[in-house]
Length: 116
Ligand code: HEC
Image (cartoon, rainbow, N blue to C red):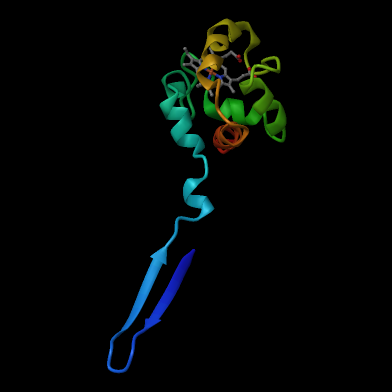
């Protein structure tokens, strides 16, 4: 959002125009990619290749159209569906996400789903 304020001085005085740029909501929106990196998720999840954990692509395909379920998984409220046999490795990682807001978890889910 940009706000323009004009100040008209007395006779012969200059006219001042003040422009204020105010950061809009988008600039402050939660950034899923940054959260994913900051929480160390990228060390086990690569975009296309399975490493310690399944690839982001595999996760995006498994959760296609199931964003709500993915957010629940990230909150520790849903069972794993991608590679349940290895959930013991993933489970402790969920503690990294404790304290994130619903908006941040939603952005994180959107980021994962973008790899489909
Ligand atoms: C130490 C390695 C490791 C780290 C770090 C890690 N993961 Fe995982 N992740 C795994 C493994 C192994 C699996 C496969 C087990 C499973 O499907 O739950 C997995 C599975 C997943 C799944 C699929 C869950 C399902 O339904 O099966 C999601 C989503 C996920 N990880 C997200 C994350 C996020 C977000 C982070 C960062 C907080 C993260 N992971 C950090 C190893 C890791």
